[in-house]
Image 1 (cartoon, one colour):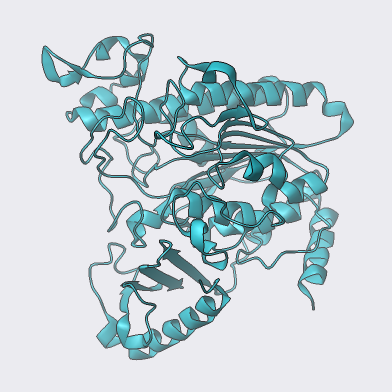
Image 2 (spheres, rainbow, N blue to C red; image 1 turned 60 degrees about the vertical axis):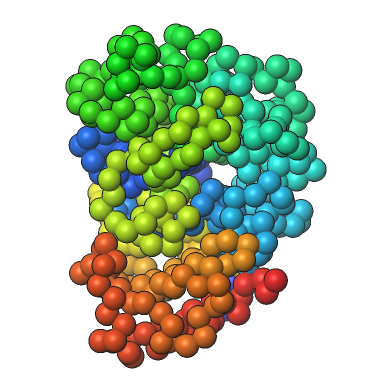
Length: 477
């Protein structure tokens, strides 16, 4: 059976079921550089009550995977394909076009299925106007075309892409300087939700993609002191200036203030701010009557940054070991678990029963899943992801499959997971034989500390052959 026929058959089953009879609105929240331990439901040292509530009343994935860095994860999300299929700029953070102009995307699929499509936040899949989000299925876009920006003046690094704060690809006069980037994204989200509620009688659902700049550096939480970048108190270097008067450093439970490290405290403040914004968005969905039939997806784009030398962006602080400690090996840009294993959940009050799910899932899965829920009739692209609908609604186990990671334009990090087994290699050339790999059993060794390759040559051989099959699908550049 062809892939389009398989998709059509599954859509018939889904639309015949009362469980998913109504197409949902979709709000997709992507945090930036939020590590597995930088959220409250994974770590009691973090204050994030609104995100925790969404996770606890939805389906929380304990093994939710992404790519090791921002642009590659956005490629995987938007195309349902591993970034290696495109090669080049898709494989690491880049301002160059990540995929060709005619590439089907999650947004273009939903647009064709009758959704109104909106982006507010960070695009980073091609930072020039000619490769902006409105060319890839978004009816409206707002935020930065480039990657990380100064939180209050919204500039990227000095150079060709310094000024990319835009609305529908047109520069915004003054870049709305003086307001935190996440607050601007939240304002845009509120506009979209309010207008969508007013137009609900048209029967047109909406897709709202919110790729926040938080909690990527530069970390800058000024509170009411908008004219003064975040800085140490000269009277006490363990405190931030006016920290006691900035709400994001002071949660009602005193969790943030119990953190003695000022740099970790700054990260916790950024999480608090992002969490509060998320709560406001959910509250507005409630107030407008859209909440029950709105599916909310949440993920980070990669593991935690760890340390940062500063001085790359406006008001960019040097920070050292500022994330919460991980229970995994590695961090951002690693294909070890710490770089790719991140918080992830889905929440849909009218349709999904709360639970925790330990199935390994990947951000490439959300395109085919949302295509099914949107009742898309477009021909299915050559997805690497799988449709999670039966897992979500019927708790049907997924067939065994391989998850695959690469990183860097000149690829030097490789990994593949099948079931509990994972092979990893850091090398400038693709592993050519099974003997080149390290092998880990993640169920027994989630920290990847015990290389058991010598004990399981048959598993190693199987996974190496699986890697070769994946590698053949990549762009050979």
